[in-house]
Length: 517
Image (cartoon, rainbow, N blue to C red; front, side, top):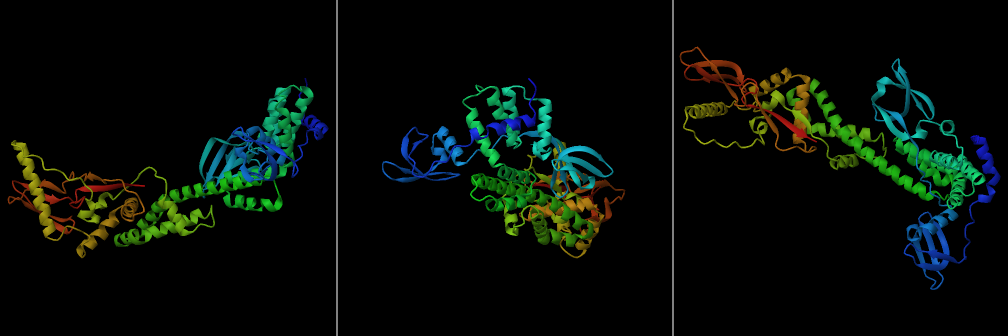
């Protein structure tokens, strides 16, 4: 048998279209036997019908009830919904493999990459070939499943299908008709189903009449269905405001449409998708702007200014930037709504920020806050234990003497302020940026902090805060200029050993890292 062309299919549809016209809607006052899902039967009159159900008046009592479609027997539900024009528009969508380009502003381009070079990427979409500047592309994903109509036109898909699998028999026509419904080509689908009746009237004889009636209604409502399909495409492209605008004008364009229920459901899906995506934008944006604004401050601010920025201004600057990002997707958003979205964010992986060698700038109490209390080991009787205990006592006394001398914190004012500013300048820009992020995350209340903090030993002193050096002075003393947090230190020792404050950690002994999300 020769394969049927699209012209043949449409001609057959025209020949028998009238014989499969939808049944007339029951008129008011006509007694109706209503079969309920529970198995009960009621006689009465359908007073009103909507996309959500019917208003029914019982014949025996005259009582009036509003019934959802789900209360009816499934077979009668389908029959009445078809008679009243409330057809099922949720045909299975045809998906194909495609490429997805995520742009720097968060928008996406979906299609097939056909060429690239000279600073651009050429992508085939349903509207044709478009050139995307390579500099605007943040990420590319291949093998992404998307609706076929985002990449090909309806005509391209039909011709491709006819070439690959021409319908040679009733089953082939049935499969072709189902394929056409997937791409909203309802006229072609109806032609295929009617052609089956001509070729093999016994093929799926119980199913075909109802299928033809439903498909005929879809042909009648093709414009409305395509309008809703276009809105759904806008939703997938994250053009939410435009999608909602089109949905709001649907009742004016199609008054008394039987697809009003579908419009309302699609409106809810668009609004939900918009909220979900905006929440993602807020969450990603908060982390991104935290790092970006901290990096900007690190490049141009001294220590005191950066500290004040992290304490007083960074939160508001982040919020303002994130609000601007979110309004790209929902122009009606207010600042307090964005802040609430951040506070209600989904938990994600922890991120890491370190104070690095600038841990001492926090002051000893803050730098070591959250460290586990180390228990004193039981006194040993060996010579090694005695030497260890003597060393620890010597370190303790040395650090205490530094505190007594008023040199325990660079943040105490006076000379310490100069030390802090000078030290801040010696740090790299990335180290200063990490310090600002860590301070903001730990003290602003905007972030969840993993407890306890990570306190790593100073690489120079091994966590003791001091180092010991061999001195040649017979009195066992030496001096170190600028070695401590408060300036010059004097080292004291016995037997040729001198104890000096660690110049790397400034006597803190730890490098503080925090995990936040």
